[in-house]
Length: 297
Ligand SMILES: NC(=O)c1ccc[n+]([C@@H]2O[C@H](COP(=O)([O-])OP(=O)(O)OC[C@H]3O[C@@H](n4cnc5c(N)ncnc54)[C@H](OP(=O)(O)O)[C@@H]3O)[C@@H](O)[C@H]2O)c1
Image (tube, rainbow, N blue to C red):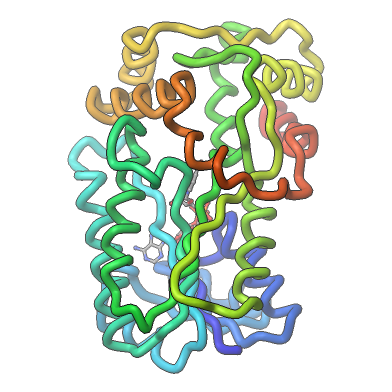
């Protein structure tokens, strides 16, 4: 099949492209960076260089595709001038227009845990709005919505407080398990969905492992040879101040605090728990080796 992959050779899109090529599909990869051209070609895929904000470019690239994988590239949290919601809504609007104009009828869309509601999930409520926009596409367009949980790579943000204070400092913690996911497992699930029949609309959660905050501290600590790391829970106010000191705007910091509060009060995972997926192959202990490499670099 002819498949278009957004997200360039990013964490998910690179392994996804490799899997789809192995399976004999023809893959076009969208990147905003012309320098990525040769790397995409070397993999055996076709580069399409342009922006996900450019409707004409997207329309031309989607035309003739059997399936398109859509993702909204992450924004720069440290950019005070960026309206985070508007940034993603504009991309989603471009996707909607390009899908309509190109005639593509099968989409796999990367959304997120937390997209099931538009409140009390902090920063993740953007995913709810993006899902809502895409859902307004004509009923002839099938959409498989992928809702991965938090990525392991978010844990790289713990490195500085481990180095400075032997601690992971968040506004939630404890012994209750929560899900985490590897982009490789996400790519595997998306490839699986691409090869399955499409019917109307569906939602699938994706997770690799379930571990508690205290277990995370132990597993990452073991990987870096430090058994004294503690997961420390602070108040929302202190957490927000820490993020602001690290360079976040007050508003973005508050939205992260609210997202984490959703982990404490059960809101964030309420729909995941009702629709639990089979866990993927890559466990926290596997990611911990990558964590240790970066920690020691
Ligand atoms: N972190 C989490 O816990 C979490 C949880 C749930 C869902 N998610 C979702 O996962 C996404 C991240 O996926 P990922 O890690 O695979 O992404 P990623 O590795 O950051 O790759 C995204 C790529 O998109 C390309 N890009 C950026 N701006 C572009 C533009 N304007 N036009 C075209 N391409 C552009 C960039 O490559 P080029 O430089 O080559 O263009 C970038 O490397 C997030 O955006 C979020 O939606 C994240």
